[in-house]
Image (cartoon, rainbow, N blue to C red; front, side, top):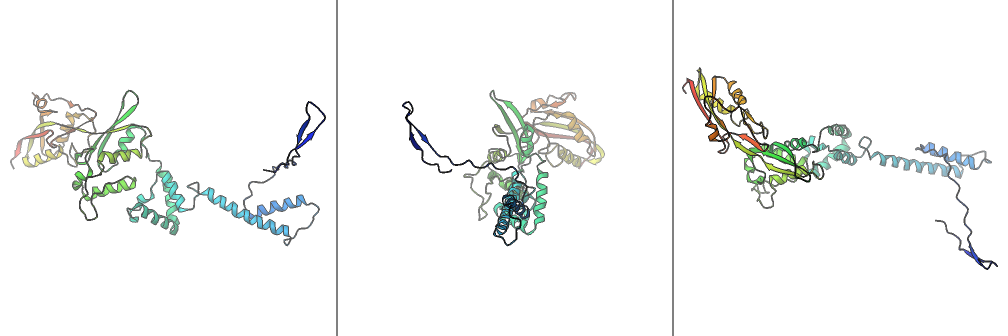
Length: 398
């Protein structure tokens, strides 16, 4: 701010107003002209603009040479302005993925839109900090790698990576290697909408179990999938073993429920309450009488029937095949058996949720379907739940 002069007290002969203060204010600043070209960005345009200004201010001077002090100052200022302009352009360019040049900025914007370039480069290692350093070094040595990720990143945002609708929660959870099936049911609790997610885990594990409880049942391939999934989504991962190869203790180890909650927090809508609950397995009692063709062995047909109605890769009760709350149709059981080789006819003798209901089938009048609640899943011959009884007639012995 400009320094103002001290006010001067001036006395007058007026009795009503005997004195007043007087201050000498500086002259007002000249108005800024609007003829400046804001598109000037390089040395030549800055130098030309300042030379034109000099000619306008000093019209009496008809000749200017490169040795004049004014010309030297103009070129020095133009060079400095050109450097500052280039710096401003570089800084502004780093604010966009398309124009950024520094590898750190590219990685920051790729992470902002949810694209992880490390996902396609497992050779850089599993430790994220070390892998990022190697990736930055790779970008500097091979710029075409950075350009490839720059193009892949925006294309990846076409995939839904957030949990918005109720179906999104089930779809995202089923991407976890330990989740075989997930189904969301919106419920109104009287004040707001809650999402109750029924989860079916691998090998019928429970949500409140520690991963360490059954980690020895995890094949190496599935264990690697779990570890890679948690590293990719930056989730905490309990140590399965210590440095000596001894299984880690359960103290302070998160449960599977807590691991899945961490995963949901990174995708769910803010303020949306989510409750996880285990699926309720409901055992079915199924009894079939199979008529075997004359040129097939009964033992072979029995194995095929057990496989068709089992939990194997092609079985009717394969984990993840049936949805929660999905009713079991009688026609589906018939269809699964009649397509097998060596079977001439099938008669259902038992079909129900419990032994009492299943034994009430008379004269072939079996129920057309078994209804399931929203959080129930039909199983058969699973840890004492349900039973499959097969009676064979015809065919060859053996």
